Amino acid sequence: MADHTFRELETAAYCPRKLYYRRRDSPPDVPAEIEQIRRLACEYDRLMTEDAALLSAPIEPDPATVRERLRAARDRLGMWDALVTPAETDVYLSGKDARGIAHKLVETDTGAVPSLVFAGKPPAQGVWEPQSVRLVAAAKALSWERERPVEQTFVEYPAYGVIREVEVTARRCGQYRRALRIAESIDGPPARTDNDAKCEPCEYREQCGVRTRSLRSLL
Ligand code: SF4
Figure 1 (tube, rainbow, N blue to C red):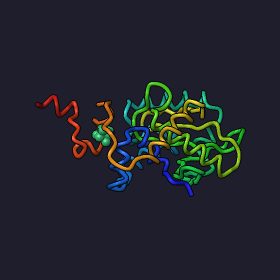
Figure 2: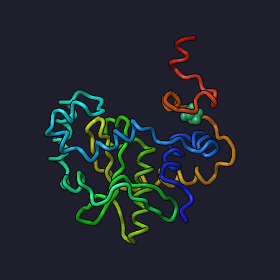
Figure 3: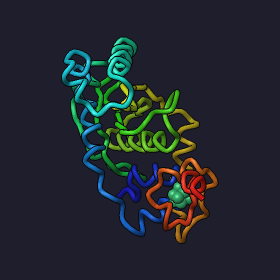
């Protein structure tokens, strides 16, 4: 039985102390607005062709930018149809170490690979490290279930029209193993992260006693 959820490992990579709070308080439900953004990941063709759908969608950049990015992704990625109309969605995977939901299973030449959909903003390139840990967790769980290597994943940021291929590299696997070790070792509140930018959006910042930049600027 896999001990950790994909989300726990993502949180461990973000901030070990946050994982401690999550376990103690049990994780919050996923807000409806986030579900709404995630649903856009199955609506790309409509967003590219129907103005009304694009204009009413919960997107962040201007509509023309989102449409342009989606078209570029369609031209760049070989398996667009498989990505837009995946064989399976919200698939529960249970691997040796971790279990959780892959938002899509995308059929490729080498078999199905996981795709995870995030409501937030993408980095300029690639994927944020905690999300990369979650992608690797999903790839490893799928690999465990299907008894074959899974070396490719996708990450989608539909509110920004960004879809990227992410390979399961040795470096990403190292980050995943580090997150596993953190998740296994927490038995009291770990030290706070020294990265202010992580505390700013963290829902535990008040109980954590972190004074964020916006609060400091008021004082
Ligand atoms: S406020 Fe900062 S240190 Fe505290 S749990 Fe959140 S990210 Fe970690």
